[in-house]
Image 1 (cartoon, helix red, strand yellow):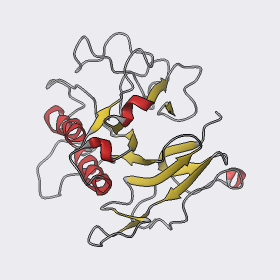
Image 2: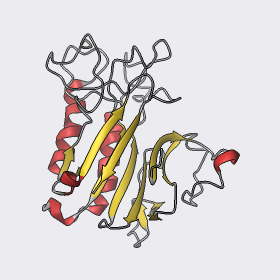
Image 3: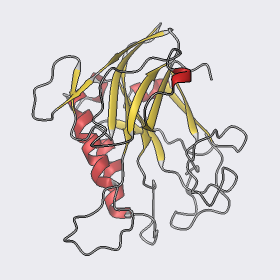
Length: 254
């Protein structure tokens, strides 16, 4: 794809056939805690990447560290491209979390907003002012929630999920979608979204395919002001979807 950096979610061990072609952080993920995690991957040598090592949220971080409450939800690095001011990238995976066993629930897969709020708390380490021009952050990934879900959306916790997007805005992170026309829309409009939604499908279940994908679970955010330098396109047409159940995004900076 001629990309410089890849932000991956639900990644595992590096396949041997690509190990000599890419560069990843050297952190040993605790596989007894998670079998999949987000990752920032350096592809060609056109950019420099400085990975932040996850440490306990109880620690005062060093310059190359980030306090992380759940290693299976976030990975971060500083990207130094040629001709562009450096910025921080965050790969997000808001994994599903089941309610406590003592709680009566019908949520078969759990909820994702708890993980999303942990991610927001962790990336807040890079925000030290209410002025968003003081940080350059690009955050992207799988939040496992629908933007603009209505209360009758049986697949969403609409009110709770909305607080995640509100909190992003409060931190000075602009919502970049992708939204139509920067991606193919589902037709007809999926149940549980407003008729005028601009959501684009980024995920399909095992029973569906890229052609019949309906729902958007993946999103991109960037620091206000910095976001004007960022463009996002959902590669969600059937011919460009790729091998995953989630489509790829093409993000350009500068």
